[in-house]
Image (cartoon, rainbow, N blue to C red; front, side, top):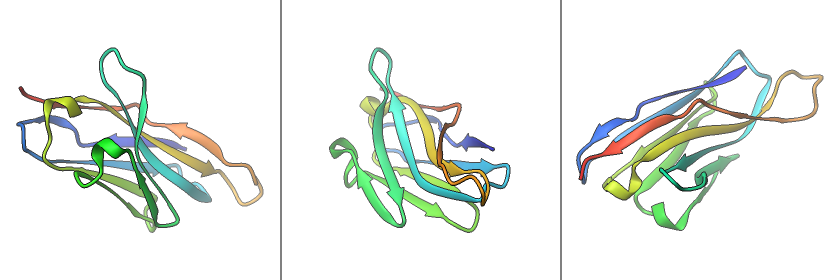
Length: 120
């Protein structure tokens, strides 16, 4: 089981992008899913999370970014609107995975990251 991100790339200020993260490998259950980001010289920080339909956002992205989830496919999305150079970072997918019905523990997994570049 692993997380596979797509989307990202280069955007102009004011532009939009949509990031996707698929959970491959057919897990039994996926609980919390989230997006984090890490800008150059800064620590990784939470952008948004979604758990059983309840969303949580960092103050810096409220009203600008939207997290959503397709539970039928174990896919989480992050819609980034009105992008600015300050949003440029590597965006990482994060999820709590239950591998099988008999493995009661959830394991935290990370994607490889996808770079969002906003031209200044």
